Each structure stands twice: as C-alpha cells, then as structure tokens.
Image 1 (cartoon, rainbow, N blue to C red):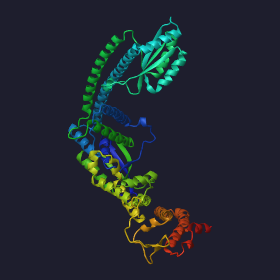
Image 2 (image 1 turned 180 degrees about the vertical axis):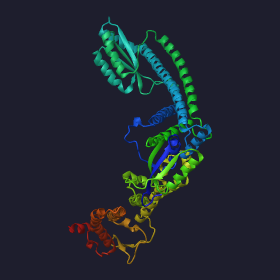
Image 3 (image 1 turned 90 degrees about the vertical axis):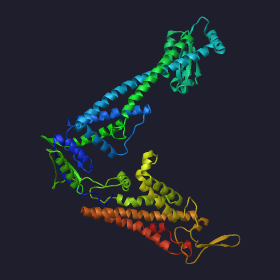
Image 4 (image 1 turned 90 degrees about the horizontal axis):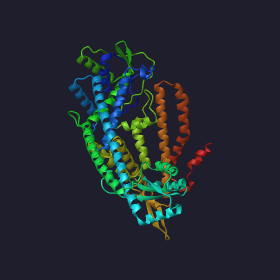
Length: 604
C-alpha cells in the first residue's frame, strides 16, 4: 500500500561462495526488495565475469524473437503464461526433474535454441527463395499472355505498322516487357519517350487474375510492353530505365505459345515445392509451441521468459565483487523485509550443507538510501502517475497518498456529468468483478484493468459533481422544488425567488430558463476552480513544510515555505475569502455586488 513516507532502508553486506552465487541470488530475486550497488562500476563491461553469460542470453532472446516472427508468419498459435508466478513454478519443476544446475540448464537451452533457429532460418530462406521464384514465374506467365494478346490484335498491329512507316520500313523492332507499379506508369511512359527521343512507345495492360493467392499477380501492378527501334545503344538506355522502375524485366520469345506452356509447367512444379516446404516448416514450428511438461505454456514462451530472467540475474551478479573465492555485494533492504530475507538465507544453508552465506547490516555509512515505495493493485496506478513527474527523495512524504483522492476528484470537477459518470462507474465495476474472465478471453479491456479502481473513483466523483451541476447528458432534472416562481405580466415571464428558500442540493434547475444561465454557470465553475486550486497548492506547501521538518532543514522553512505560503494566502487566499463572502452575502440589487478582480487589482 501507499504510506505517508517511503520505507526505511538499511545497508547490508552480502558474502556468498562463488559456486553458490547464482542459486542464492536467484532466491533473493524472488523478494524483489533488494537494491544492489555496483561494486564493479570502474570495470568495462567486457571485462566483467558474467558478461559472456549475458551475451548468451541476449543471443538466445534474439533467436527466439526470430522464431516468434516465423510463428506469426505461418499463423501457428502460441500458448502464453498468465503470470510470472506460473513461470517460476514451471521452472522449478523442470530444474527438479532434470537435476541440472542453473548454468548447465542455460547451456542446454541455448544449444537447443541455436540448432533449432539455424534450421528454421535455413528452411525459411529456402521457402522465401521458392516463393520469389514462383512469383517471378507467375509474373512472366501474365507477361506472355498479355503480350500475345497485344501482338495479335489488329488495332495494335496497325499501330505498329504506322510506327514502322514513320520510322522507316527497313528498320527492325524489338521490345522489353515486365511488371511495374500502376502508380508509376505515367512517369515511366514519359521517361521512356524522353530517353528514346520519340523512337519508342509503351503500352500498359492491367491484369485481374483469380485463383490461388500465390498464383496471382501482386495488387496495384501492371504489365508494360516497350516497343523500340532495334539498336544496342537505345536498348541499353531503355533497359536501365526499366531496371529502375521494374524489379523484373523479361525478353519475349519468338514462340509465345510454347514458352507459355513451359512456364505453366514450371509454375506447377514450383507451387508443389512451395506447398511441401510450407507443410514441413509448419510441422517444425509446431514443435516449439508444444506445451512444457505439466503446463499449458508453449516451449518458446517458457524459454523466452527464462532467458530474460537469467539475463537480469547475471546483470545483478556482475554488481558483486569477486574476492578470492567469495562474492561480495552491498545492497539496500527495507527494514521490515530484512528478517524474511535472513530467514530465507538460513533455510537455504540448512537445505544445502556447506553453503556459505553471510548477510550483515552496515551500521555506520554516509550513503543516501534509495526510495522504496510499496504499492498494491489499488495504489499502483496512482504511484505511476506521480512517478511520471518525479520520485520523492528518501523518507519524503509520498504525494501519491493524496493523489488517490485529488486526481479522480479534479477529473470529476472537469468531467462532471451524472450520465457519463455512471457509465464509467458501471464499466469499472464490470472490470473489477470480471477481471479473471477478461484476462482469460484476452479482451480489449485487459490494458485498462490496471486502472480499474482509478476509473471507478473517477466515475463516482464525476457523478457527484454532475449532480451538483444538475447536468445529466446536458439536461437539467427537476429533483427538488425550485426556489423560483414564474409570474406572467404583460406578455412577459418573470422569475421571482421565494423568500427564505434554499435549494437542497446543487444548482436549481430553473436556472436553465434564465437568459444569463451560461454566464452564471461559468462564473460558478471558475470560482470553484480558484478555490480548489488554492487548496491544492496549499497541500503541496504543507507537504514541503513537513519534509523540511523531517530533515531538520530550517532554511527551507524560513526562506521558502513561509514566503511562499504567505504570498499564496495574501493574494489567492484573500481572493477565496472574497468569493465565499460574496456567495454568503444577499444583494438585493445584484448590480451593487463588488467585482472580485477589481478588488484584487486595487490592492496594488
């Protein structure tokens, strides 16, 4: 939970035998309360003892990430662990069953992952090459079909004859075909015309194919046919342009029908190879998603969590200093947690004979302790909001303690609406009551579960402030008898306030009939904002006072708190007094009411 101040910390010295270091640090890590100081900060990372093990963990995680991407590519589902505690239980059971030390288990998993990743990468590369070959053949097939259609058209044949007559009947023509993005077609056509100086022209053909996705032409692609006067220099220039815009250009053979049949046969063979390779890769990937023994977690998920955990563990081990055969570390520990840590270490020594562990407090030191703040499901989100702006120093008052009320309340002041507030309340109640069900179903509300209690408070305060504003989806509701009455006089409706009448709660609904409704409500909300703002700033200054008293810092009290608090009360505090006094005064003639801003300005 969030307390008024951060937890009291003590400095401890830890001595472990080199052989038992990994096991002891693994047990201490389960508490998540120790903060180790880096005793090797003067050493470069490459010279540290466990840097090689950290590199193995990083490499293994990278390889597992590649396998995960392949799993997504081939739509193979992965069973994930619900929480970190489940993973720890699975790891303990595996270590007990295999009877391997931590380092031996790491080496076994790393070697298994390396072999599997290398084989999957090789098969994936071959599969990609087959797909590229199949795609090229499919494009070539469409090029042959469309080129044959174009050449066989009478209209196109006549156009070619006309071009031949213009360029000279003794000239021969050649062509280049390929596939290009449809959006580049116009620019490609202009560039061909300029490069050939009018001695070539381009035709485009759209392709709409059906059937297997692998046998379709990619969308937004079209076939181009460049016809030009045969010549080596012009062919080289046009080929360079085609290479820029098209990944693949094809030469059109003299016998289109025969070549088309050969390409279709190659497509059938390559498509069969792609299908067989896909099935083989899918079966191979299915092995890495098999559940770990006695669990519902996939092997790849377990291995990824395992190497991430070991990486963090070795990073902490690198903070310990090796002295002969002992590892020496200095760490901070909350005072209320130190008995549990010492008990766990004593139990470790009892279960494993010959283990050397010493955990002693360092009484006299001049180091500044770190800030340790306890949180739970309710307070965690508020602490994260405060930590976004800054973490309080050691033993300072934790502002998150006040934020649990001020943040949702100020949201309610801003958002105030009964209907919308109730929607937030119902949503938060649903998340609070159905947390496990939502996690199991992987609902879109899962990322919001962490803030469900904060959303509940925001909804409650929004409903409360909306009731004060008498605002329900922009409408005013007649909950109580109004303190105003209508009098019709000379074709005009006038409102008169009943004597000694006080509206029970919130704003009288009859204000919606007033011509100055917006002016009145804006004035009310602005004045409320000023009052709440001054209260909020005063709380902050009072917290500063208690922090100064805690650390016996008289300079902060005399030269910061007193001048700041005096200035705040003399200016904005006086303004709040004027606001409340004006509210409590009954002016028969409202025009006689003083202006608060004018009164503040006249002070100077």
